Image 1 (cartoon, rainbow, N blue to C red):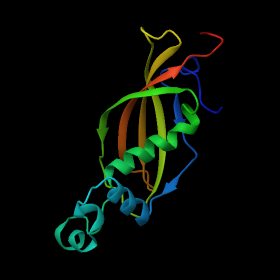
Image 2: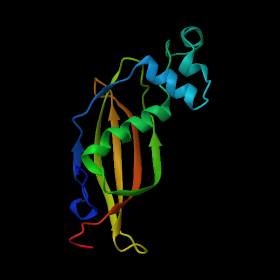
Image 3: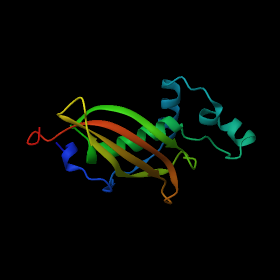
Image 4: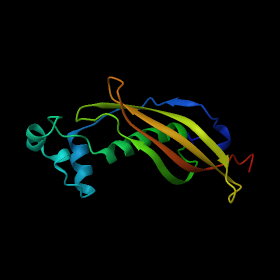
Length: 153
């Protein structure tokens, strides 16, 4: 199991995830249509060429959010997550476009034992996604309920 137990994290630790992902037109179109998001800024090249400052479609921000969290899982919480408790401070400071390659880093920003579940702890992770030129394209803080180490439980 590659994920860490709650007890193995420490505040301030930064994970630089090796997995990178180039975003495709199929990713954007499929995600936008599967989630019933018909916004022309994601799926209409002509609209974006003539009526936007970007000149081309933007990657759906909810895909971007899912991607940056997803890339982090293998190195952090795979197999030790009980439940995601919520996301906060979600920001998209720069656009992501078809053909951009995303890389991610994750920082442990807070942690505390669960009051109601002694076999679990609550971890707050800040995920930061960057494009291929290291421009910050997305950030979020994820609160996750994790298993504590069986040796500590």
